[in-house]
Amino acid sequence: MIWKEEYKIGVPLIDEQHEELFSRVTVFVETIRSDREWEEKVSKVNDTLEFMKDYVITHFQDEEAYQKEIGYPEAEQHKKIHQDMESYIEMIKGQNEINGCKEIVMQQFAGRIVTWLVNHVVGEDQKVAEFAKNR
Image (cartoon, rainbow, N blue to C red; front, side, top):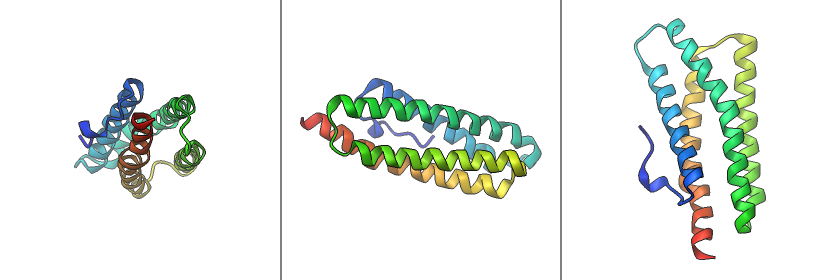
């Protein structure tokens, strides 16, 4: 799994949500990379997209509420980053519904979501943790 303990920011709810996101993304990537035929993977891929669409909204709302609670000065910029990812996930889900589940699109999505998740949690979310610790 790509989750590491050092990614924790010290807020139990958010840390649990991050671990769940990393766990689901790990399974998604493993599914896409498996040797099974694409048709056998489609159900799991669709399940992951549905989960991501719903779960990231909840998670982002929880993160944003925490940032507001602690008076995080970069909360608006952070929210914009969240909105961009929500839009991307919605776009991919919409393409999937219209065009069917295409392997190349899901491979690209997997690469982008892993990169984004690690960079976001290690970069942006750690800034929030640092602010909270130093206030």
